[in-house]
Length: 196
Image (tube, rainbow, N blue to C red; front, side):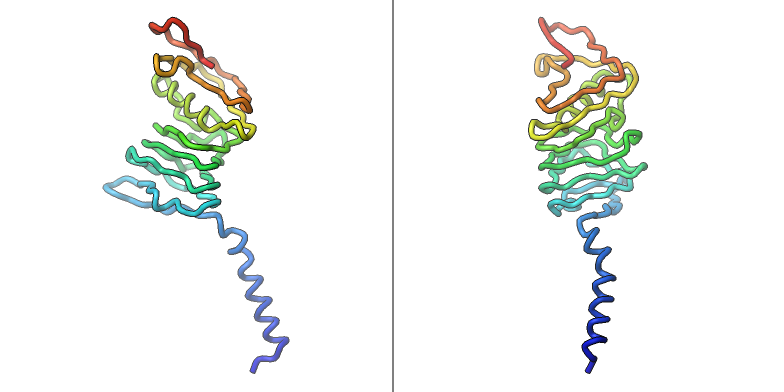
């Protein structure tokens, strides 16, 4: 029979070994998931509430909708991105360096809790339709229940209002906009429209 002091040593050793696993239990590295030559992000890969999902690869949603688990966040490494689909937040967050382009053709809905939102995260270019969609997506990442800041990087961005959305950007009450670029509203047939 093992003496009490040896048992305590084994218990202490087991405790020390398990600390890193306990501390990072909510950080989940998303694996690659190839289907027909594309790395596809599926709803079944995001199921743990409160988890931080770390993206290290380029993922395609194939036009599908991913609903985030309650309180979960997406954390992007330098080569990671998500394209072609819809992300629905559930008190969700996004973490990425301002220099990373992480969204290509992504739309947002639901409830997001993103403190710092960068135009550089989106594939901003000379395409008016894409820029308009990207600016609207940035606004969807803000909310009235938390303070958020949208940073618009230097550059000229053409946008267009339409009957459905006469305002290109609708800012929530707790949102600050830091504009280093120029937003150019293209002509249209509407009697009134605005950028913000």
